[in-house]
Figure (cartoon, one colour):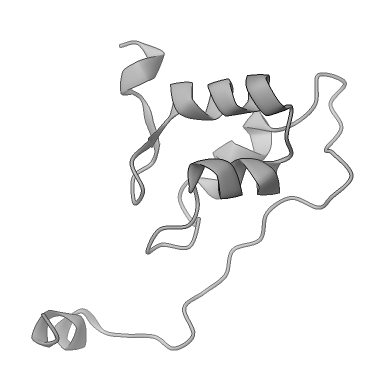
Length: 88
């Protein structure tokens, strides 16, 4: 399996290759990487991919850039699958 086929963010279908390329080109933090690639901006709010995105954005010295790691933001109000299915 090559990097091009590894999906980091399933909601937005962002690959590991795309995230690494963004980090290499722009040298950005986890937050900026999220904004540039949309990883962590899907329906789960980053619950699945946020920890990996944080680890990928760590600088070579082992320090985070000048900001805190990304946070998980729950939906404004919980919605059941039954309600969601009826709205389609």
